[in-house]
Image 1 (cartoon, rainbow, N blue to C red):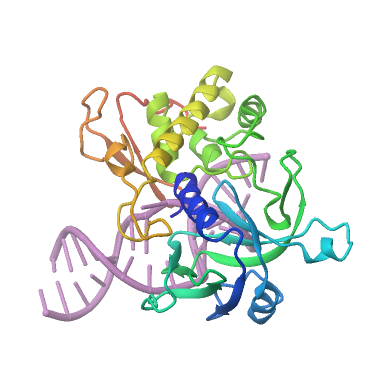
Image 2 (cartoon, rainbow, N blue to C red):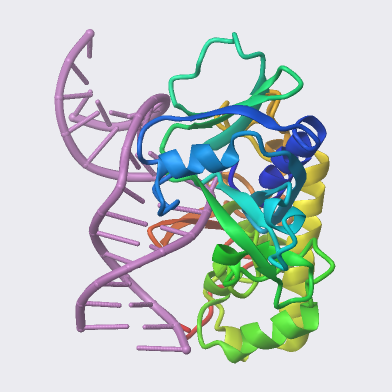
Length: 298
DNA sequence: ACGGAAACCTGCTGGC
DNA sequence: TGCCAGCAGGTTTCCG
């Protein structure tokens, strides 16, 4: 479940079913799921076993489980550590009965102290797990995992400073959609919600960021926040069973999309047929009438 | 500093 | 029916 609303749906599920419980046993299979955990999968399972999950947090598309602080209990001044989970393109976190049939791509199993089992399932294995220290957030929002300090706040968190982000975007010399997808400027926005925000703002993704007005940038950021909030209210966007919450249920925001995937269909604002264009090794969907391509490239 | 492409994967769809 | 190209919601890294 990749973009912010889908990850937030998962975070809420984990918060409800996992926080306050401990990992009584942990199994990690294969090398890929823990490839970013440099000390290796054995170290990961050894250090997770017996730990209590104290919180489930998220910034952008990154999710992390704060663990009971062994160091703090020992009197250290360290900030503790967290299990960072990124879902990549196809990752899922499922809470199930331990005896439920194991999914083909279940890469990690966490037995919980309440008798349930948390599973990390990931078909394409772009996602992964790593246990890392927490450090002070440079945006003033408590602590964050040390490996995501390059990730900017997302539009739905209090640390998000729309003025500052707008200025940073206009200082960049790039295309607007590139900037929206740049997780170091603003996090959580992916290909679906970037196209939706651009459609709402009537802006083409190739508009030059340094030529946009502050008001235009403010507007598109506001639309990004709005559309992701609305999607969250619908349980996220699911095109298929790959994108589900911890109970395996799909979200239903797909029916509310105005741009993504709508090539050849009439624009819901003006009726012009929507188009699809190649962009950054993927696709962009837009209305050629409402979202005029800039005359000169960015 | 920025753009572009490739890398990392599996599985599904559509065209021939 | 089969095969193969193309495509998918992400991130990182390298190269020019």
